[in-house]
Image 1 (spheres, rainbow, N blue to C red):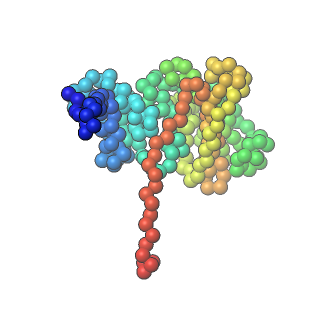
Image 2 (cartoon, helix red, strand yellow):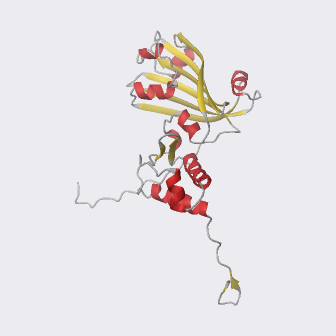
Image 3 (cartoon, one colour):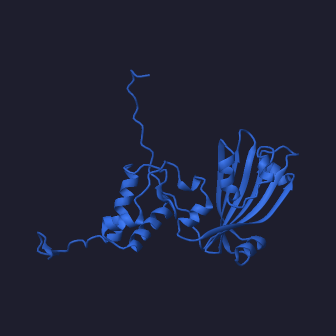
Length: 259
């Protein structure tokens, strides 16, 4: 029943939030507040359906939205875990593209399109920290989601720092997660841009030449020499980078008598 305001006009109550919205807000609140810290494993989808008295489809939709927002990492066999929610943008983190695809509840596979052992080009020596005669592994990989092109990976690996990459099969792990498992690094740089697809890239991704694409270029170093440089190209109409973060807590100025 509507309430009446002091002016005599009926005052409508706000409609109750949908169950989907309530579940989303509660789980997001647990994560943002720190009640569920990074690395915390969420209850299974089945357990959440019992807790909220809803369908598994509703729970799946909520978890998918939270994964897209960068709050969760979803794995089919091990469930969902909370991702770090630091002050920096989530797009600066280095994630496995396979996990990115699986977080969308899509099937994932990758294939190595080409691999070549060679010396750095003049352009690579200008943009990377590489000795002139340093041998590189140049490798191109296609990442697929439900068998459709999801991301084209074009990477060089410094064999002076990572000699085992020359013979790595890259059958079960693509180069990105393989490097994270095998090689420590102490600095990274990202460059993100919207571009028009070159003919070779457009053909690989099944796009028209000049179609919009999103590119992420990343370079890592150890300690003063490039470990790897990669260019990741996503179809622009099918991909978005989402970042969610909280502002840094302002530090209070200490009293004058403290050192």
